[in-house]
Length: 83
Image: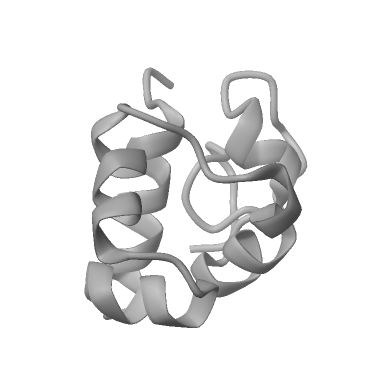
């Protein structure tokens, strides 16, 4: 797959029916921060990775290395994930 972290965050957020503002509030960050992640201008802090991936339905490993992931547990990045 040729997706980056920002694409995966955006697709997971949309699939959960969340706006950038709603995701930002759940993570206690600004909606501008979420927008920067999704555009690839910055990355989420490592300390919020577990909560972020839980909200958007991915595993931390698959969010960080989607091309190498084959766990089948991910909802968006694994070719044989649980959609």
